[in-house]
Length: 248
Image (cartoon, rainbow, N blue to C red; front, side, top):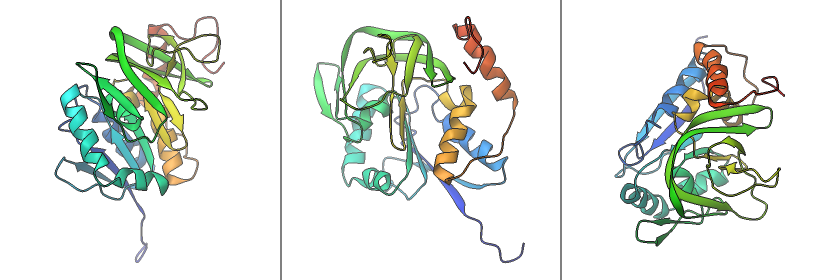
C-alpha cells in the first residue's frame, strides 16, 4: 500500500571475524530467511570489532577460540551497549563462547579468569577434558540437536534456568534439578544460551521461530520447510524419541 511504513526487524551478528569458528554465522541467515518468508522486512547487520553496537531487536554471539573470545568480551564491555539493549528488551542468542561471554566469568588456557558481561549468573571453568560430539537437549516438549566442541564447564547461579536437559552429550557439564541430568545453556528472560553448534538455528528451526516470535511480540504463522522435516530425522539419529512421540 502506498505510504505504508513497514517495521524492519534488525538482526545484529556480532563480531563474525572473532566468533565464527563453527559456522554460527548461519544463525543470522536462518532468522532472516524465516522472517522474510512470512513477509517481514529484515536487515542483517554484521558488526565488526571496530563498529559501535547498533540498535537491533536480535543479537547473535557465536563460538570462538580463547583469544578472539577475550577480544569480543573486552569490546562489548567497553560501553555496555549490549547490556543496555537487553534492558530495553532485545533478544540475545549466545552459542558456546558467546554463552560464556554473557556470564559472570570464564576461564581460558592458563587458568586465567576473564570477567564476562554479567548478563547471566553463570561461571565457566576449565573442564577435565574437551567435550566434542553430538549434543541432544530436551526443551519442554521439543528438542535441540547439534554438536559441541568446548573445554569449559558452566555452572548456573541459583534460580537461573537452563535452556534444557541433556539427553546426549555434556553441554554445561553440571547436573540440573530434573533427574540428575546434565543441562545445556541458560534461559534468562529474552536471553538464550546453548553449547549447540550446527548452526543451532539451522538444525532447529522451531528455536529460530521462537526467537522471532519473542522479538516481534506476536505468534508467527506456521511455516513448514525442508529444515523442519530434517529436524526430526536429526533428533532420531542422535538418539531422541526413544519410547515416545515427538511431542511427548
